[in-house]
Image (tube, rainbow over the protein chains, first blue to last red):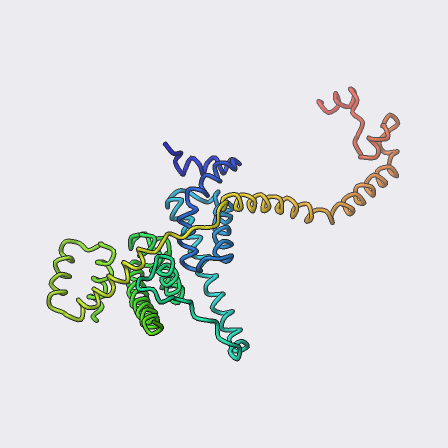
Length: 190
Length: 135
């Protein structure tokens, strides 16, 4: 039987690095889903993922177990990812005027096969999710991809449940429009 | 679309409708073609989202995290050393100054005081002095 989270936290607090490593390994995939969903795969997501665990390590003495370790780490990760995402948007806007005369980045290549394979579909979904506003993206991600309930999503993001539902509605409606536009583009290319 | 319909649809997307809300939503789908169309499109979007492969970090993520935690700890210790290092010469100078002052006033310590006692201004403790203190 696996060691309970609280016991691992106690041991990690007492300086047992092995216990902390076990917690990292236990929640790595949960944090990966959150930060890669928010920022896309790459070095930014890796750094935010590491930051989330380092912050958890630093704040472990304050962890009282009111929320589960998974919820606690995910809350840290999603807040860091939202901040990174907003920073990225600001940087993009700052450099937009400088770069606008250059050639635009090529659109993602989707070849002319009849069925879009899994890798293409993943890319399509990931890029569509990336186009949502960070606050909407966080709710869509936690609620629709990571499988958190409305209450849990509200708890992680520290917002009311009503706000979760309204952001989910805006996010899903926008996502639907983005995906429809992508599929239309794809059809046009064939 | 009405706000209430929107709320029902979002709860339905996550299978969170109560039995009463479920009945209400099914009636709505039967009577409002616009809501039904929206619902079908949202379900297709949800299916696309849930079919995406789970995201993962590059291998050995935990090892990299532990290395960062180790570096963080070392940098904290280094930070404390850096913080107090500039105070070392001032502290040594202060101690030497106190020793010199104590040495200058060494005659107040009495005849039997050793050099160390004089330098640190420690009074010599004798059996007679201890008896006096007891009184």
